[in-house]
Image 1 (tube, helix red, strand yellow):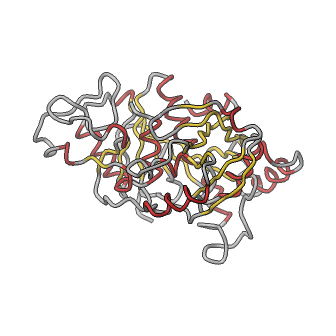
Image 2 (cartoon, rainbow, N blue to C red):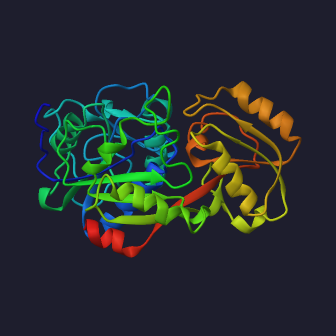
Length: 342
């Protein structure tokens, strides 16, 4: 194996060993927000699965895509003080290296919506992406923290902390590698993790977590194991308007999702009191067309339409009913998890 390349700053990796659905994006958002509280300058490095742009670019929120970018302005979606562009010409015109929406990929687009003052760099080569970020902005290296999104298999880049997420509701499927199962790599790879997080732990039985921890310890006896939940906090529409989660109580709705685990989304809506009259599932990372939304609107017959935030960011350029909302999810975990990292 080729020796991993090192960036001149700390790197935290977040990933999994199964195909989708463990809740990486909310976890990345939560860690970036905590890093800011700790006085650090987080920068997210992401592959941007299914994004059209292949080279390094800053991911910008679609709702801010009309903002002018020029001399003295940051190419990322807002920036904290101290994140200033380098001199024009040093890396070419950095204003050309901006991507939004489908060009970025749905998960980076969602992170850009939620983290408007955190630089997000899309690049398949995460080392190259980190260099691109540093060369375009005057980072204080001592306060810079790279967060490697979906990085457990991206071993070409050195990381200081390797966080492995495991879905407590369906940890390893049939324990077979893809395409026969859900595993990206063998269970023995669990030994590489420095920290292990069991996500969606709040929706499984009391016996499930201890049994899962015992199984994990067979492969990694040293890494601490934390439990986390993905808790809905509110409803938000395409313009950023919020609605109280309590409005779902006993309300008839139409819902749809194009994510890895649509059943979990459906169960979450039901748990919060929604009466789902119609539910439509699309493939994970589905690229929506206007005809998809027109059909959903017709089938909804005037009912409120609820989807995921990951889906909503892909619908910003479309004509949507005013009563289309996304369910906002927050990553909730014990405080010791952040103490351990930082």
